[in-house]
Image (cartoon, rainbow, N blue to C red):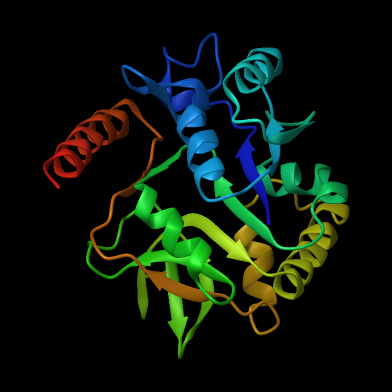
Length: 243
């Protein structure tokens, strides 16, 4: 299992924290950044190969990852058009490194260790979802059809549950999705979500919803999100200490 971490965004909504470093290097506790947490969590579940896409402040990101890695093999792939494309093009740029089973996550997603353990233990391709939280207005929702996900996007509300961009994708499913991503990018559709490509072939890329309930899992898009994540991690650490 190889992990793909998408870290090519500019993090505009997190300024001024992202004026001199990428969003993934934002501190979420006195001891931990988002990227540092990802590297530690991936090592804990035995992921030894990681592909990280980069955009602005590539040198700072590479130096940080090399200094704080857990002896994983890390490959860095820059999206040269990060300021005018979406992460679908970052995936396209990294496609030669993405054979086999893939753990795919956004670089600004912060989650409890238990969430990742459940993803890794799931028998099949999956995406993290939660029916225990209200549907977000502007974040991902997953439309369910039977035991599979039919579509993912911010615009869906009917038959949908809250969803987070943390996937485990078995090779067959991932190759179907990646092929459609390549088609999108070669046809100039580079400024949309990778999930737009998935939605066209969801009958071939069979992704299950992995219900995590109230387990902590949240993206950091803004300073307000960061405050919520810092507070949530404090609560999580307190609960772990009490066990």
